[in-house]
Length: 212
Image (cartoon, rainbow, N blue to C red; front, top):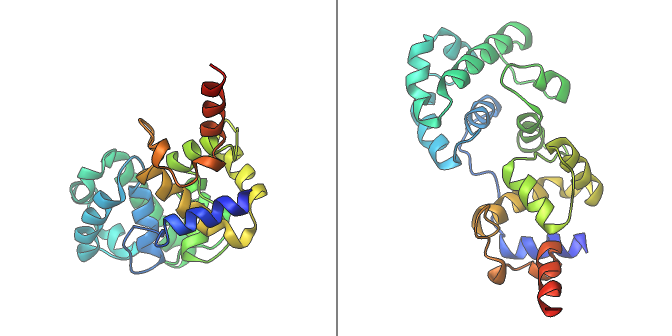
């Protein structure tokens, strides 16, 4: 059934991919850090301006903190994000020769980089099998019946067990797209959902109604 679900989502969202704009691994890393509790559309507006002023770890290290804060203010949580970005860039320069590392342990050791961000980098930037669990993936995975995990790490583990590694990248982007376009946090469009026949929540609800 999981293969059928994946194929149906591919048909529904044939262009599902990373919506963040970036020119290299470093720019993607900064964009993903900024995307916490912020839309990709807003991040793209912010990074377009930011990367014209500073597009390398060293250039952001050289930027005064208040200046960086102003560039990213509209992303929300801008003070914490600016401090983390500055510290992250310092580590990249001092410990990684200005390059973004390619392992989970090294990525999550960077300030401001959690497992979700690291998985995005591993999958999108470096082509490694990884599934990043954000709020959309967490919510939709539960509704579809792919996971009942109480934490993002538990959901990630369930998704990795449910699909083949070669499909992890697609799974991540397809579920995010489905969450944004159809399976909303509030008022999901269940009747218009292309996979409602494979959705545990919808099927259970329809069965309950038929018994009333």
